Amino acid sequence: MSVFKPQIEQLAAYKPPLDGRDPARYTLLDFNERTIPVGDHIKQALVDFIHSDRLQMYPAYGDITQQLADYCQVQEPQVMITNGSDHGIELIIRAVGGVGDDAIIPGPTFAIYGQVATVEGMSIVAPDYRKGEGYPVQQVLAAITDRTKIIVAASPNNPCGTAISNEQIAQLAKAAPNAGILVDECYFEYTRTSATALLAQFDNIFITRTFSKTWGLPSLRFGYVLSTANNITRLLAMRGPYDINQLAVVAAKAALEKPEYVDDYIAEVMGQSKPKLEAFLTERDIEFWPTTANYILTFPPQPEALKQALQAAGILVRPRVDSEGRQGLRITFGTLPQTERLMAAMAEFFAR
View 1 (cartoon, rainbow, N blue to C red):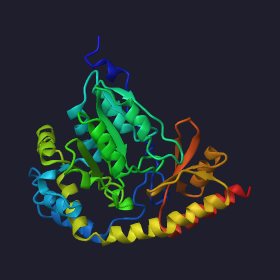
View 2 (cartoon, helix red, strand yellow):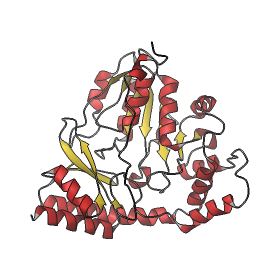
View 3 (cartoon, rainbow, N blue to C red):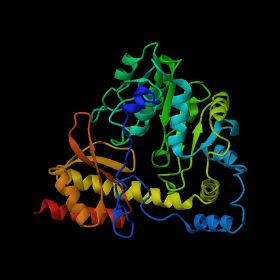
């Protein structure tokens, strides 16, 4: 006999390939992170806090939710901070779903959605993303039943970079008024498109965001949820009072006060590196999915051999598969010099 729920017994841990990821040795184009260090003002804010002799105290978060509300152009009661966006995703799914309920999670996608839904005993319905077709909204709408309690709408979706429009999100919210519509805006700063305008119209939309990707703070684990004030009140009743690390809040506050380091990086990555790599792939007739994010899902010949060649050249990329199980490589857009190094290494491999 086991003390665990049956679905826990069958669940494997999510283990991302983190071993050996040394930024001094490799250009890290595998985890969709910021590929260069954060600004000195953030490092200094952390140092200053450490020397303030407050590490022995419980966290006090101050006005961080108001700062985020101003940044997101919503009201302060519509914001809840979390321990990374994974924490927000978990709380939302736990709050709305349970045994016997359905979670509609188009795939392939970020593993955490399915992991949490499975832990809660939900059944997963997984419509397929298809290249060039966008979010599978018609498949999702057709899958909605009285059992549907959560619908995931990652925008853009990982690994394929596919976005979902506000019109489509509104369709989902109308079609499933008793289900939570989880809009994961993990890469918001790269797309600058958001469902926040829908929060005044629908009370079943939940938006998750993070400081792990654009802001360059994944090691500190800071994210937040945007929804109606009533929904945030309910989620706060589930979240612990000290779940968010104080150092994460210190870094986030410093980042929000001087966001120029993010704006400059985005301009280079999305305005220069993205079109340059896309042109490189097109010229060599290498298939890739259209993307709105800071990463691209590619299907080069000999993907595993290419991955190994890039690693030997000091560049890490991430193997991923499409809905048909076809092997590809997801590549993060880095700075222009990093992208040029990547293209040179790829060209050398293809010239063999």
